[in-house]
Length: 318
Image (tube, rainbow, N blue to C red; front, side, top):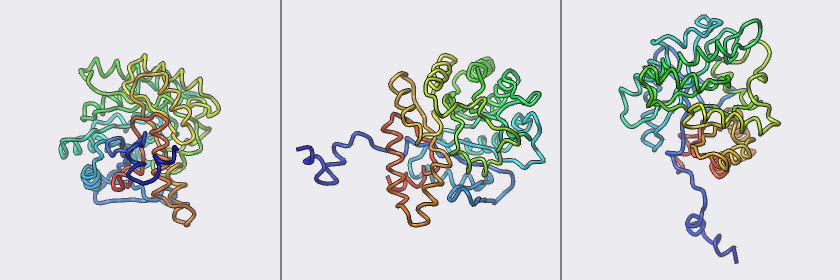
């Protein structure tokens, strides 16, 4: 009788195949200029923009709950944006300052920084636009400079998310040439052109001002292209590969897990999170149980690392 192994909670725990741990999670944060500010937006309940002083307090709390890794996104005012995303290249930008403050404040923490220009460009695309199109060569040159900027600030992991061809190769080359061969590259290897990014784009103020990102992000109907992108990134020197989004792409996670012997990260994205939050607020579902089920399914599919806005709440439950 298979049901004998399901009789009590203790027995179910004893034979469980997949278990979540706080150390599996990376908590994403949005950092802004100023002091003593915590901002929430309507479309993204429970997620905030933090000034650095407030961010440090939040990180202290998640560390106390066993989460040891964070992923930083910079959010800036429109007046600081230009066509080239120049703000991202400043050694004194808000992400670099946040990295330095976090590293000076906490010993046992892993800091990752998102390497892209969509948050910093006036057009909102993930690369340098020339004649209405994203120019791949110019884009990877800028991505390499941004990654080096964050490495100098003290980031442990740089996370290129622009889906530019050869972005990993360029970043690995730039880091190694400047003595940062110990820095980890976690590449958004299979980043799909998804409808689940809406709340993120609201909080990061990163929506494209024209067109869309379908010419460089993956078509959600395809898996072979994702596998090709993953293989290419591994060959170019990616240490960790990421699939984004997670919930509608569990098959991609599993296929990558079966094929490649590298750590796999899955990004449980803003839309996946927000639709549960809003449904729970309306009394339609129980948020905690649904969140645990979703996150467990992501790990069961093969993810070693989960980037999730639930990280803090799940750590409290675990």
